[in-house]
Length: 168
Image (cartoon, rainbow, N blue to C red):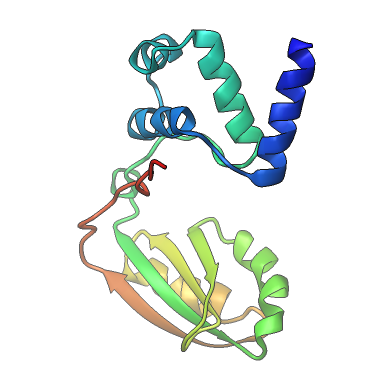
């Protein structure tokens, strides 16, 4: 019976895509320190380690939690120029065809399909302005369908935070 209840509950979460306040508390903790031991999360939440593992796994299955990684400072790896590039396409529908080409450029770290003056907004890191010019002229602007780009160089990264967790 217990297995059935758990299955039914998981099914409900999957159908509804909801998370409860304990899930939200767990998210607040692990978002601020992904390396925190699950025993510490369990102690702070007042539940067992097994409960933490189950909930984290369920939230991964539901795509509430996606991936896990370390934050690396690009400058320490020689990428001193952070750039946002507005990309215009012949047709917005070409977005899906352009993405695989952008994925071939390792310096491109984000890509967004947008409204407004550009079809896409990409973020990339370059070693310097010469490297940026090479990426623009020889890689991005040569992708079929790209009709224009506008480059904005970031001078400083002032705010970097996680999305706030709202409790119900």
